[in-house]
Amino acid sequence: MNYGGVMVSLLIEGIRLDEVSNTPILLLREEGGSR
Image 1 (cartoon, rainbow, N blue to C red):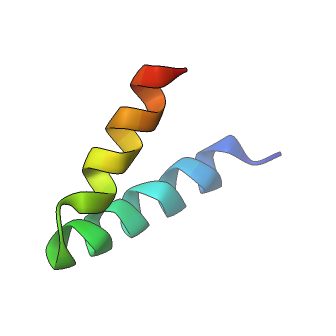
Image 2 (cartoon, rainbow, N blue to C red; image 1 turned 180 degrees about the horizontal axis):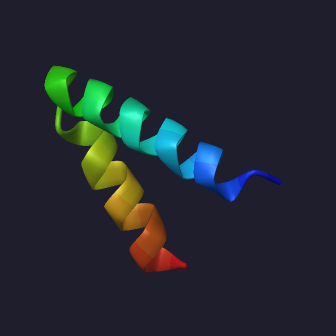
Image 3 (spheres, helix red, strand yellow; image 1 turned 135 degrees about the vertical axis):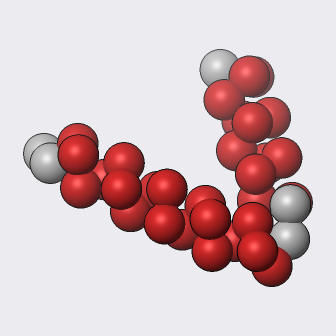
């Protein structure tokens, strides 16, 4: 797998979603904390 490409894609999507709403960021943080 290309972890570098995946991380870049997640960063781009995260920034794009963050511009629309902070909810996706909060969901990602919550999901990461619960595991």
